[in-house]
Length: 383
Image 1: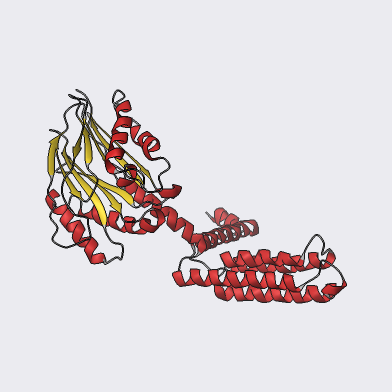
Image 2: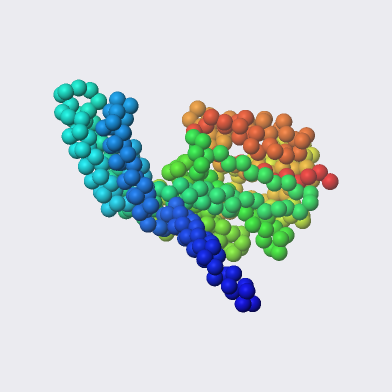
């Protein structure tokens, strides 16, 4: 025991422990910084060190190291530093410009000197950098954390839109395409297995607006709708969602929604609609598509709205297709034409059981449409 203590107290052992603690502390500081929780002194020190290096390079060879290179640490500082630290960086850059001007002489004596244009460019970059830093400070989200937050929001919407696993004999899939190739969409899905797993409840919603403009509202509504789904009887879901939307008092606060309640044992279902495009059911017996249009007003328009369901049954081989209006309606195509085009393309997947069809249907029917598009397929496989 005494030998182990002696070995632990040796100089190399103590230095190893100190190095380990320093490495852990530096790692934690780096993690906190890039999360936006730590101090920005590391970035400030690094940028301040680049300023004399640029100034020395300019004095030694102003042709290859132009005085305007000082905009590089200023731009980086606008992205990395807080406003108070940014002012210190600007003071260092201004000092470097003065030193370069004195060392190189007046700009009238030759090229590659500190000209009024260089000063204006550096000052303009500093001004815009300070505006960006002040905006980040007001919002309370540093740029290092802002991208992570947007990624996290996108993943949360994607997780909430994930459909639950269905028992054998059933197939489900969904595809979502935001407007303009963006990462956020005003269309979303919430789904859950209810009634001890016997029923599947799915809500497909289209928030007013599209893309980034509707993404934040879609995230808020998807969380609220996910909490309501399964906590209320099916007939009470859309009235509760309508009341929630009215309480938000948004200027552009309406939404369309369609609510499917499917019995996974019998295939019977109820379809509630709030101003949403009708669903389409393929009957395996006839090979024809039938519209399933329930009645109900838009969500968020007026209080006390009533939503009357339409009932149906999915028999073996039948398919139920739910979608948002961006898939079937455009400025130069009405709803009827869009439904005909969608069913015509969907007929090509009947023989394959619609596996992998949702994404391909959006590509075939509404690939270049500047609107959010969502498509949900529920298939009961043949016996």
